[in-house]
Length: 438
Image 1 (cartoon, one colour):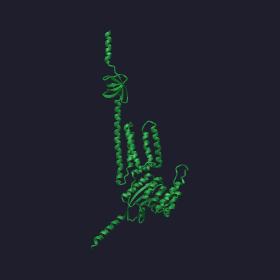
Image 2 (cartoon, rainbow, N blue to C red):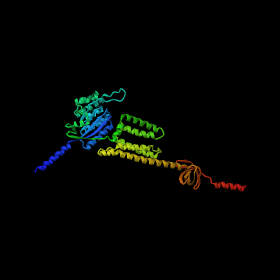
Image 3 (spheres, rainbow, N blue to C red):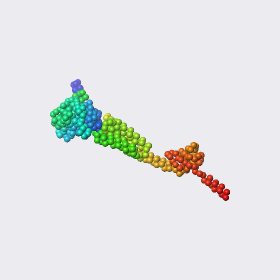
Image 4 (cartoon, helix red, strand yellow):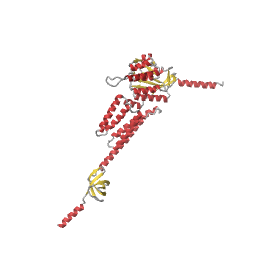
């Protein structure tokens, strides 16, 4: 009877342990389209989510014709050093060619559905009839072969993906130890993990579960922006557009061409990988501040002000990347930035209107040619005069004294050229003298 409480406690602990291990918690993310920097940001965001939420696996649904080698290498490095088991699944009708096959090989567990294929990872050169250098092919072949060796997959077949553009169906890939098993739905793919093991961070992880729960990780806004600008075609267009708009704007009147050109050039450099995402956000914010200052100093009537708002909003959207924030934050953050953009737009509009009014007022006040005033101080051809109640700097070729009445004949910026107004008394005196003589 004395052992009963201890027995109950041990039983409860065992039951709690079994109940916690009975459910598989899976973070799911979809990768569709070309592999680029936006894809890497999407997967990095999903991986950080899986770590934060203590998920048992990161489930990647892959459908890609290929993409950038630089982005693929970042993804592979993340998968090889992952602290969470990475499962890559190619669903029915999807593609897994070129860079996609390398990503599939780097996963802890690779799954394909019937009606799919993998391989064709031979590098392609840009140009008509251009061939890729042998050293490039050899490097990528060795790189892919080593990834396959790390994951215990068929090294020779993986190497042929690059050297011979070998392509395998799902069944052939399974038979030749490229994928772990075949599943024709996501549900079957997750259930097929039961009892399987994977080497993760130097430890063997075995999937033992009765039920599973899938949490879908949405693509972050930064990744969506980067996916657009990192498209090689669009990045090239933005680069050329930015250069030509800058040249056109600097050699012709107006401010709009160089403004748009500067934004296009920065986005192009980011898309081509010259500027990282954090530097891109910072550059856009700095550019927005420069545009705002230029708007306040030059009469562009809102062109630079609008460019300032666009640059700052884009910069804030791509700059902020905090993996420890809750998922709800990433849903609300774009709305918050949109509110900032609207607020900035309102402030800039108010400032532009006020400045325009001030310039108009100054223009009307500055129309002083023909007005008369009184000399307050004058020496060596320069001095000050009161004209329409305002004190102006004046110059004159005549010898003027304090109290003389003058007329404005010319204005140059804030300096007035004046001449002395002959007094009417002098004229009357002359008339009187003539009358006396008569």
